[in-house]
Length: 152
Image 1 (cartoon, rainbow, N blue to C red):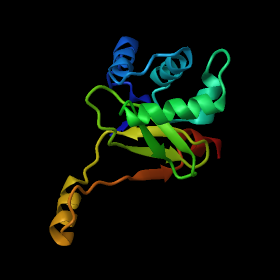
Image 2 (tube, rainbow, N blue to C red):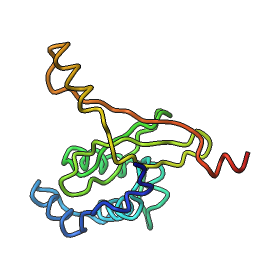
Image 3 (cartoon, rainbow, N blue to C red):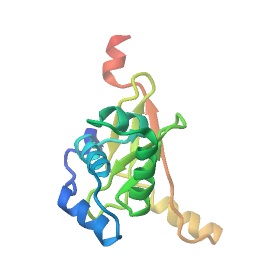
């Protein structure tokens, strides 16, 4: 089912995020902390430019790109492509592998998270027929949201 904004998922605390960075010999710099806070507050996939626009204070796009690369490498964020060629990132909840799908409005770009996948049996069938292992998938759905339908 749909879950706009991940409201039911637990989020990582800032102290947990800082500890994870320290375990990897990384500091929680001011810009990294601000970026993580933006991701915690906006629990939907955000582009690097959206993150930059939401940051308080002085930060540049290169810093956001570097931080997102590090956070992806550490497994703290998941990268998504929602069909427009723009990379977006979402903070992962504890024990979340980042596997979920989205429903994206083609008009206003509203993003709704889909909680259920339902493709495990299909993946198992692919493994059995192809001989491949470690099969995974990415799948996004596109449509027109109710608000855009009402607006015409």
